[in-house]
Length: 242
Image (cartoon, rainbow, N blue to C red; front, side, top):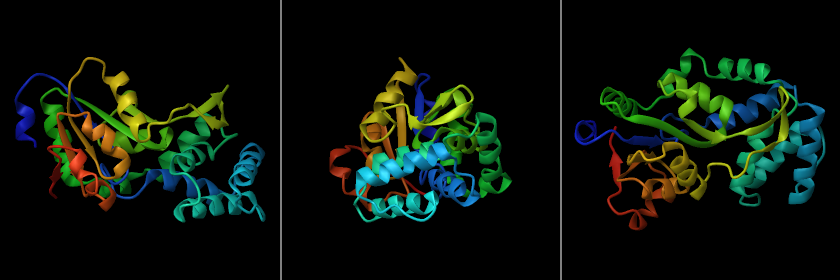
């Protein structure tokens, strides 16, 4: 892969985050970190109760318990995956931007570098050496994706992620829609890269398929079965080996 980037004109490479650039899910790190902090605000608590009621999920106990039950409903196929990404994005509703930044930097500390997939880091280094533009496209919350992307040298200006609404300096219990999930990933990336050709896209799961299909070179990184099941619809799909 690195050798292929030496040829041709300048272009873009796009990477999913969780499971592709790094192990684990930074959206879950953020979500459960906020719940465990004991600092859910009344704004978040009211929104959690509303989501639970609309989804038929039992409310009760402290709001964090209800949020965990909603997440369990998602794991059991009773709550939509895109909507759970939205919940995870605004779970810090009522927090200031500054407090959120401090929180995610505590989560994405020096130890996070060990979670970066070395085979992808090598591609990033080669792409940067040849002047290509690098993008991260993730349905996880923007603050923590930006912090994680910085570890691999991708700036916030090149991060496409689920973004909570800011009202003044505080986050609301709402997101800017559509979030970059499924087909929304390729559409958001198209707008961000402009006329740059998409030389390669990297993903690990089925909801990356549309983004992969839009690239000259679709690359699977440590792929989940759900992505491999869609291989027939992704001509030229390759697996990046460790």
